[in-house]
Every structure is written in structure tokens, then in C-alpha cells.
Length: 202
Image (cartoon, rainbow, N blue to C red; front, side):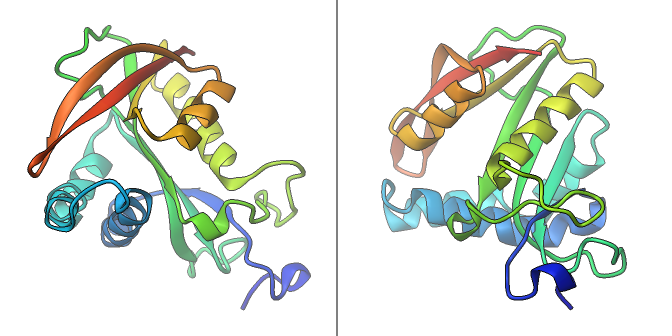
């Protein structure tokens, strides 16, 4: 059951992902990607891209890599109920850089993915004791987790790529200290897309 103090309110708790979370990550990864980008890509292209890049085995690979970290945003009875970890509604994934056209440094880390269902953007975030963390939204909580994990991995710089037309995400990254450092082109089906590459020091 939902935490008694917040009955009827959908709250968010963060927790580290494990290999067992790969199926839930694949489902949420595909759904949040489609929610974010169906406006800009033809149907067959975005479906094929999603099927390839958000498969269970893709997330299982990242979760098994020692240089990767995934933090989940879950709703439901995560606080105090480790046997019922809640439903995954968002996540952040960091890993070794996968930016072949960009000159990376040995201590760079890539923020590969950060997604959250739109309906949870303003949901209260709970701490490990089930208390609401004031003035903290789920997306910022995920970003804070990514920064902390990147530092723990020994990273000195966090890189990310985002679509040049994704103004909401770009504003969020800039508020978090990221600055544009390059561009990249990549193929999604029949469509060539352009990303901006951002970086911030750790």
C-alpha cells in the first residue's frame, strides 16, 4: 500500500537499479522515449529505433558494466518495502562515453539517458525515511544522482547529447551547469538527426 502519510498522492523514490530491473527499464525506456520524441520522427523510424535501443538485453548490458550506473525513479511502496520496489517511471543512465565523433578524455563519463514520464515531473520526491524533500523535483533528483555517481566513478567531466530542437531539455541542462561543446549527427531510420553535445566539470 502507498505510504500512509501520502495516501492518494503519487510520490517518487530513487533507488539504484540491478540487473533484475532490465525488463522494467526496457519498458519504461521505450515508453518514455516514445512519449518524448513521437512529434519529430516518422512512425516506422521511431518504432525501429526504440525496438533496437531499448531492448531488455541493451539494459542488461549496461547494468552489467562496471563503469555504468542506473538510478531509478519509482512510484509506489518503495520506502520501507524492499520486497516491493515500486513501478519504474523514470531513470538516469551514465556510462563510458559512446560519442565516436567527439574527442573524449580518459576520465569523461557520459550521461546516456535521463527520462521521466511527463505526469511525474512535479511529483514529491521522498528521502530514505519517507519524508518529502522540499523544493526537489524528480528530474533534478535524477540529475543529482547522475552527478554523484559520475564523481564516484572517478569522472572529471560529464558529457551528454540532446536533440538540437529539445528546448526544454537544453534549458534544464544549462541550469545544471552544462555548456555546449560540440555537435554530432546520427541516423534514426531514414531520418538524419542533429544533437548538441554538452559538458560540465565534476
